[in-house]
Length: 413
Image (cartoon, rainbow, N blue to C red; front, side, top):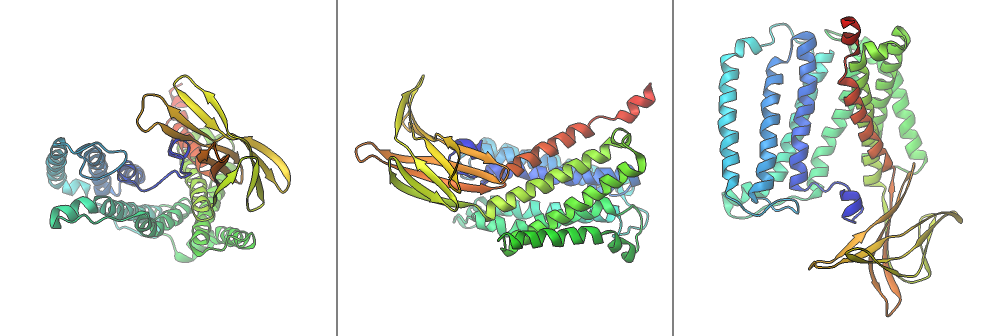
């Protein structure tokens, strides 16, 4: 919706209400991993129950951010006294839950020795990573409200803050997601552990080399790509070895495992798409005459004449833009500006884009002047952005696939 309808070529802006939806996703993901260890090894019990509480309260906090109006956002409502009720609800339910956990503290203790160089150890570290990224995101989101309460001065942070503080956590998440499938439960010797990671390290180095050779040499995206490649290959190797040892039937008997691997692969694919589209997007914004040409890298865009059509409740002004790549015709897009009747702010951009495996060409008709026959066109190249949507589809497919338990159905027969 943000990518297509808002007409700014982006999909995430670290808006407070957007962040409110992301926060419980972080802690719920940590909970799923913690619950897996609880189920398999009877460990991380305290973490599992604590993450349930945190995730629940963060959903209520998101409602508070949206409904109270204490934080400015294009998605939030105006100021409302209902916000205080959400805060009291968070406080009361948290106290009740913490008391219940304290009374059952002996049951929730991990009594056996804990090894960090093990699958449960990696999951425990991953929990801290997710909690860390949750904390820095909450801090940046609530800082305007907290600073105003303390000093009557509103202090805000922008997209730059969130990008800087979250990127190290995302890197750590990619590394942890790559290590976890390759390491068994229980203790593991360092030598044997690192030996298993050698093929993935080689693939990671090859991916970085390929990025460098193709001109993608910025430091941060190189690091993100390296960790994404590492995670991808370890996940692929583990899945392939499972199928090799157990045959194709393991796809049904161990569907929860393969569902998790598919979700992990989806995260990696999405991470690569986010990295490339964030650091290597290119843009041109020009006012040009009708029936003229503008360019972006090796693309040439022929901007046609303004056309006007009347819709059911709007008037559409659109311009055809023919896309040429290396002098070869590719496609024609039709970005619009619509004037809706009966609205004060009655001009809306209807973007046009052409999707390819290597990226999107994204066009916005920002303005036009029929008297001077000029139009203002923004053209954006978003590399590999389709990988974001593909990664999301893979994650959703993995979740659906893992929801079924084929083995139990077979045993019940």
